[in-house]
Image 1 (spheres, rainbow, N blue to C red):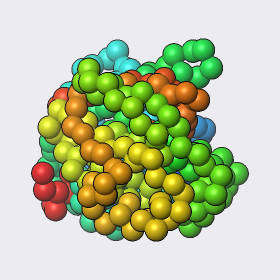
Image 2: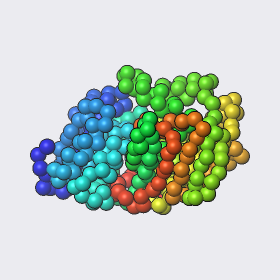
Image 3: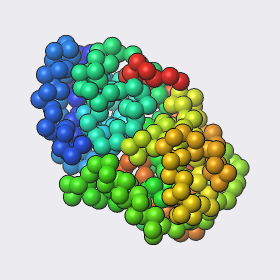
Length: 317
């Protein structure tokens, strides 16, 4: 990668497979619109899962301080993990923007970043920024403890099973919102709740978990609002625990996953906190920003005002 001395120049990291190949198919159009908007940039294409982390590390080492992702939430997650594992500069010196071409695009949904490329690029040109909190998560793969950063929402339980199935199908070239919704419905038939101990800012509680979401943002799964009160600038995590609900009760209440009223249900608890630990009788899968990770036991934390992001015109705290 050629060294960059112009800190106003963007590095664009494109996931060509995002949105069932839209990243690759639409790149020429996106590139032309960026040039027309007067943005100066270099571009790198991801070649495999996890590659955006390495491209981010190389970009920052080469002198870039402004990054645009062209992809979905998973690409954004990898870039964030590159930012927070880099040794070249403090994360707060970096500006991150996004042109959504993925399947869910849930992070961009919260910040008013449209799917229309020209409008998304105009937002980048307007350069309205804020300091965004970043979540942390520690978890296990077998006996190995790992750490991951997330920008939007992490979770465990039922949704993680759905994400895991969906990601396996994506790796085989099958994706889209219908695939996610199909996996959601079919997974309900076999999924069983898991008994867990949860420690929220030092306070111990127990739950028969259907799902547990830890939100820095409000949307996940292509528009579900599982942490509808989350504010990505308040230095807190929003936690939603669906506790003791059976599969048929979940089916009857599917609409509350989408309409923002999830916390009104008597079997669903909501918290705001800085730290949450989860251990379970049987291992529970974990995902973050739609990326399948490992399993419990897990610990979630928050880094306040950690990364400068470009946001759209209709974002309201």
